[in-house]
Each structure stands twice: as C-alpha cells, then as structure tokens.
Length: 162
Image (cartoon, rainbow, N blue to C red):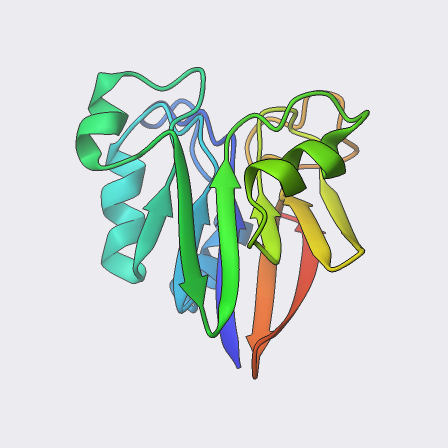
C-alpha cells in the first residue's frame, strides 16, 4: 500500500500561518507528497521534501521563489502504477471533468487546488481530487487535507479535517 499525502492552498507565511499540527502525522508517514499550489513560503517545501519525495505545482499566489524551488505549472507522474496529473486551478466546477479529461487524457487521478473546497469525485475512471486547505478554509466546512491510497494499480481518495 502506497500512501500519498495531498495538500494545497497552504498560504504559509513563517510562523504567522503554519500547517496545523494535525496534518503532520500524515505528512511524516507519506510515501510521496503532492502540493497543488499556493505554497507561498518555499520553506514549507524544504520541510516536506525532508519527509518524502515531493511534487509541487505553482499556484496563483506563489512567487518566483516557489518556482525556483522546482514547482511547475502542472505535473504528471506515476505512483504505484497510477497516472496522476496535478494543476493548481482546474477552472469552474461546470464542465471540469470534461476539461480535465481532455487536458490529461491518460490520468487516472487529477489533483487540483485553488478553490479551498474539498473534492473527492471518482466517476467514469477519473478521480478529481482537491484536498481543500489545511490552513485557510474560506467557504469550506473545515480545514482539510487528503490521502491517496494506492494498491496494485488501484487508487482511493480520502479527505479529512486537520
């Protein structure tokens, strides 16, 4: 079983906005970490990379320092035989599944952020997954993060409060 920790929209700023303690046990035990953008402070990425291989995309609030760290506009990777694509902003909810399928036709999972609203929708062979935000829920019901559980090429998503 492979455990992929998924976070987005951390908007970290030193000690003034940090990832909550409740998220760290999941991050510390992950086999891979995905961050779907709006990191803001690349120091967080150094902490994550010390825990597990970390893949990051650039969010609309990220500066050049996050890109210099290695974040890209989008990412495509394979974990445990599962093709995963990641982008910060997937656009409006209406038509999202069609747009994302067209953009990433080979992906089994598409991870995104931006809205701070958790999404875990596995339909028609495509899992759309937004972990929400562990630091700033905005309109979401709670601060959250997610896990992707991968086993023998199969994947299941889980989102929970932190």
